Length: 225
Image (tube, rainbow, N blue to C red; front, side, top):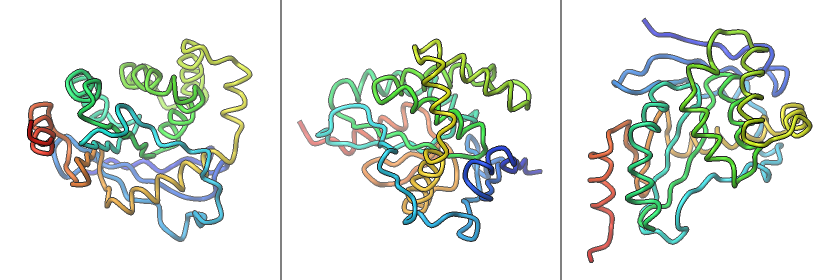
């Protein structure tokens, strides 16, 4: 039986009547979703998306680009970041071999709020906050009370040095979630994304995988020494 989650009315108040559905993926280790429908989405051309920065680690001139599509409420994504990312960073990103691009997927309002929090810290703090969000995913997502989850997210933000005033401003910004959704939709449709985590290695799409398999794909793309 598929597990589905309809985006709640609290989030709809922020960005209209768009709906997202969460379900168990058909492939092991993935979570699938139905992309937002055109009927429910505001035309991306009407939204200023200039403030939604691409989130990148590594050398801009690295020979291999790995793009990950992931959601902060996806357990498989948390597992990937715990088991694969440390080795990927140490062996490929920090050595200049891989440029890593992270693209947020929004199944539900909680994942959207987590993305807003991570971006609230600015580009320099984004990936540090990301580590906390994935490492403590079960804790901050505990229960289904939106007020409690917002409180948990604010606690993560404050531990990262974001002030209450800055957090208030980030969560009160009605334009940012609309812009984030527009960018997400454009990217997901362009790359044919329907599950998380999904990886692109120099533009070729793959599903969730372990470090050894990902390293093999990366090595095949590296120039001969």
